[in-house]
Image (tube, rainbow, N blue to C red; front, top):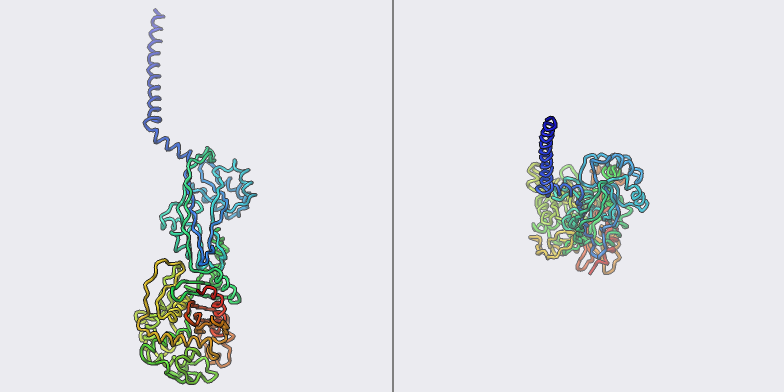
Length: 599
């Protein structure tokens, strides 16, 4: 009886236990069905996320090539090491190891630790351009550096960077703001154009990013490459610059502290050379410029970061007299033979305006040609008071002075040519005789940039055709437009006067002594004041001993050859004192160097 009762209890308990096991087994099977069948796609994706990594590869930029086919910006192959942030590994320990292996500075090490602590999914570049010794050291330490990998990449390299930095520009690491503006994903090592042509033509030069899918193990080591889509290289950019001429200009301007020079085709507006001094090493930005280097560039008194050719704003000085002459011709105030006597000064009320020949008793009686060639101030004082300031600045506007040229560079300044709108806040400006006299010699409020000056001289010698300065070759012809209301023979008179300015013994640029036989040049000098010179300084000659930053700018605009001009030049030597004695001879050397471009 007892045995039968025990047997029933055992059977009942076994049944209950069996039911329990069945329920547990059913639950387990159900869970397995849920995980492996019903939600297999979901969990497969999660598994692949841990096992498979997708990496974007920075696109390769197109080259920048000069007009003779010489490469100005290339891509250099380098090896670099990157590290992928991972919450499962101690970033500080890894960086400490790399700190010693790669000779990282303390500042760099701290920055890497900070970036890795943010747990970004983007691989961080620790160092580029690894040496073979560094690569060998890293390979030995790879087991202690989870997430570290070495890859081949390309970085930008500039040829003659200090000669071309202001025009070619540079690339640098893309910021988050850059990525948002360009609507591109974050890519390790991505560099974009930050200045110059590199920035303007970013979309053309930049290629298409590549993509690589790799399988990794638990320590984030690459086991195999699943698939690979290599990056596509961007388009090459063919520019109008000539490297040989650019180098020659740098050599010619070596003795001068601050200067700019622009050489341009008078018919097409193609810039053959654009040089601004001082410059900087644009390759510093590619590598990631150090704080001390950046601070040095920002605080340098000669402002090397500024492209003086497009952003330097100067009083044009006497080169503005050709615009005044055209304004007077247009108003019928003068003709080629109109003569005015120059005693060396002009008195307006109780103020005396001097001519630069005041010590010699003036120029005597001069006509239009001599007034331009010998740069007679008094001639233009008389003309200015007859036509007024408004007519003079209107003619300047016809030659597009005081307006951006539209050249393909960021940072261009427009200068200043007074307009009625501008004068609204300066009551009676255009009625002031003193303002008219200052404007007549390119002083006072008038400001212009070297690239505007070179366009002006080109338009004076190409028959008045309006051109747009440009640095990149244009395939489609631009419709021809001409300055309105200008008679061709007026321009011939101006050009003859510029010829005499250089090639006549009494011309202000005669010391340039071109001696180029069939490659002679013409032009106009200017010496633009940057501060007021007192009567006492003028009388005792002490103005010649002013501090560097208070000395006159030396300016020259010109063209070559004399027959059928092809090249125009504008040259500004800051604080060079004399347009005729300093700027003109230098311009002559530059035009001589440009002769090989003549076709």
